[in-house]
Length: 185
Image (cartoon, rainbow, N blue to C red):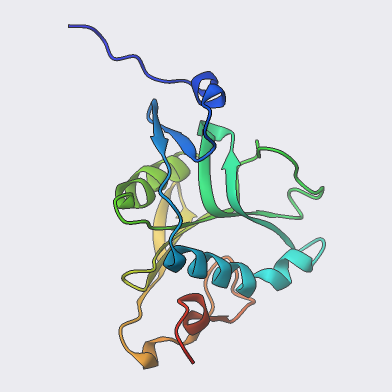
């Protein structure tokens, strides 16, 4: 029986398409973007935008569709505190993020819910959010004593569920779930 050859970062960098990731030695095609995914991604980006504009303590570099060279993962949104990364980042990030947000895509839930969870936990990423546009759920994890614990979880089923919330690491901001999930007002 022949051993399966795992792909490496060098294989990934030679791959002709950009919408791929290296997951457990396999080059995987990223899903095509859907409007639900894009609306949630834009909604979160808008809600945290005051933090992007702030320098120094409390300020963040928040980026969408960013590749991080640690294990060559690509994230829907990722953020670095400006007090830890004071200079504007360029290129593929080689610094572990302080916050990652994945927005699930049909057929790729396992990657967002399990693979990235384990990868980010292994690297000690302080905050990890998983959002499902289809289920209208947000689960936020915080790195505590060597593992993740849930610090916020909400499923929006009825109009009164679409409230303003404060979620770590952005407790200073009230985020509007109605706006994030693209609900008509």
